[in-house]
Length: 318
Image 1 (cartoon, helix red, strand yellow):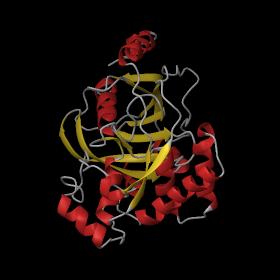
Image 2 (cartoon, rainbow, N blue to C red):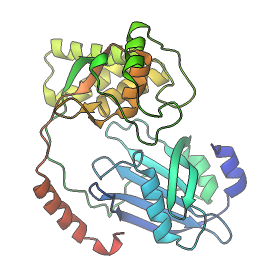
Image 3 (cartoon, one colour):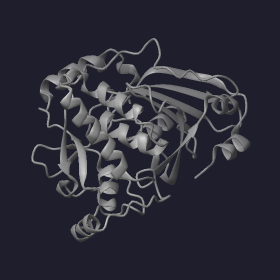
């Protein structure tokens, strides 16, 4: 993976911001359209730097669709370039945590506008300013038009046995997650848990048993205190922070609350969280916090609202 220092050494130069699109919209294939703020910085003879900023609820996240979004911006703003731009992104979460910019590099460029294997590395605001030659706006922008909200219930949580998790099929699977987890390995890990951290990816980078224990304990305490559903997420986050965990364990526990593992109604597949589920099963974690089942939105109603939303800035669509 390209380091931040190597990036600065080879590409830092004063650039001009030539694009600041507060409503850069991408048709995200089989999913609903996505929006973000896109800033493009260029200089003669230098690789363009593109900075994407997105809030939750604006379509597939920057994390889940980095290849699609970078390729779309590349095609739109640098169509004659044989090389992709330097791609920087910031996903704004409701909690304000994980608040840094991330440098995203890609393992493979199969053809123009075709990227695979994204990898992330945090880049601080000062280094980003060095890269482009000046400060970069980190907010969503004043011309942001919020996407119509998806009707949904307040997030609830439940505790299940780890062995009951369905078999994950992680996309962008690195070498440590090639085809999910076979049933034999799942059972072996339940009998002999393996909590040793690995350096292959963030998901295997720490002990999920410790993280899930804190998250499950926080939920049980909140239930004892009869915390209302609409206050539950905030209460769980406060309890996790109070636990004063090491960084990785805190991040993992928070992810189970802010971005919970979610199963489809039949319990046989995932709506969200397959990479974490893979690591949890690999380690033999026995108790897991997952999201309560929620009713799906009325898709026809949602698509009509989204079409009206898109019509406000149709010229900017890809």
